[in-house]
Image (cartoon, rainbow, N blue to C red; front, side, top):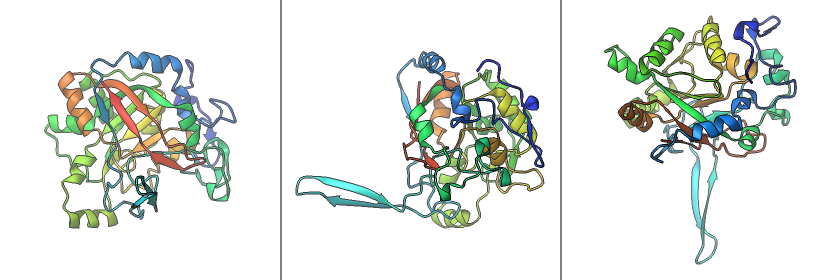
Length: 312
């Protein structure tokens, strides 16, 4: 854990020119960067709790509405089990329609397969990378919020979270420096683009049009971003936009999902809600907190609702 290789020392996938971390934690590894969630780091992060204030980091399961990327809204049924007992169920429930974790079996790297070189598609049966692996291990530690949207506003820069804009490594570094934040291995790195607040300002007709053709600011998908993120060694990267990287992307630059999920084994989260957390961090003058999440233990699931809180 203390001597992880630098990005430029990682081997490349032949023919693709993408660096991979398939042997960093062993050839049979099923956790990727969640390996960096260690008991020592969890215990140290627990000492960040000062007031005990708990802030939910999840959107309601009904947001965005309509769902994006062709997903459908779930159906919530409430019914009586008996005269005195009630129950409910969800039908047509997409695990990644709202605040979500992407399991390592969510994206493959072309013919080279999924993280670790597994080539079996989940549609053909489990490939050992289901979300239940992270649920069993647990996700907790030092959360760090990088308030990119707040920094943009403070600088008086033209910025709209719904515009397609690729955020560069230099911009991220500028925000981290302005906050006086130190990134440490094993952090739960949270980046606020301001997407939830901007999305909620849309009327119904605009939301329907947006669902058909979404765009948003996000991280650049280039190799430099993958290098920066890997060398920072967070246990997970959590963003409040719908895809971590910007959309629409540039095919000439490539896919950050492909670089991070199947190649580097990154734990990724999307559509987290950092609006309340950002206000509290700004008021406190501190951007670190105790982060706790419990992905649903769906055997061999490709994703899960976020189910995350910040404890201040």
